[in-house]
Amino acid sequence: MNHPAPIPNDLWAWVLEHLPDARTATDVSWARGDSRVWRIDTTTASAFVKISPSVRDYERETDAYAYAARALAPRQAPRLIAADHHLLALLTTPQPGKIVRGLPLEEKEELRVHEAAGRLLRRWHDHSAPATADDRTAIRDAVTGQADEAAACLQATRHRLTPDEQKLVEEVAHDLPHLADELPLVYRHGDYATRNWLWDRENGLGVIDFAMAAPGIAVEEYVWLHGALWTPRPSLRDAFFTGYGRTLIAAERQALTLLAARLGVSYLHAGLTKKDPVLTERGHLVLHRMTADRN
Image (cartoon, rainbow, N blue to C red; front, side):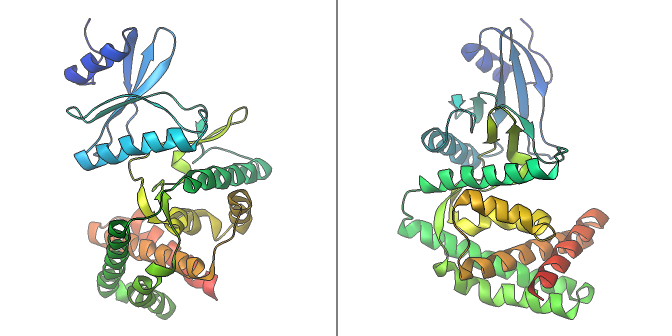
């Protein structure tokens, strides 16, 4: 049987070993260079196959699928059917629901989604093993790296920042490393954004894409949500933490603002460097929101 293009021959042969009744493969990759994902349709069901962009990503994601199977209910996350370290391939079950990002939802239902997202993430975090000494060292180094990045971006973008924005990014560079030891550590999902939430009115909320899962600072899970959604709509944040079951401690609140500002100045620097007006505007928006949120 000929393989359906554009899936590679060796990957299609491997899929058939595990799903002999597979009929078609449809490219459903994200619009970025390292995303290689296909939906596999069989005579009775469907599945997804992914090629990880690196050995590190493959190992991290296979570990995370094992973790998800322990931490989450069957309809809260896909399950790993098979994996192959030579192909860097992962074959998984489908996840019910539609991607939340861009999904038209009335406010009441959107609040339900965010509350469910908080509840699911708390369940994920609660299964975390204690951080090792090596984990803590790696996390501290990663936080210091983000502070150093902010300092470098500040030098390149200072002329495009307001005085309040400059002061905020300076705080990122100076204060963020000192907060690292005060922040709760967990096994993070790592990309807990609405593009990876699937909402199904019957089954509730599920989560996908575990390629960034690793030990880290719990508050980093909320950075994109804080910068993109919660600051202009605090009711969504309140619903999320109602589901999560606790509020942020003072050090987490400070770190969340600083981490979001780091993301904003990174967007701005990338946008100016690449002459990309979308990234530039996104950076300005996040920095404006973070400074306004403090005043």
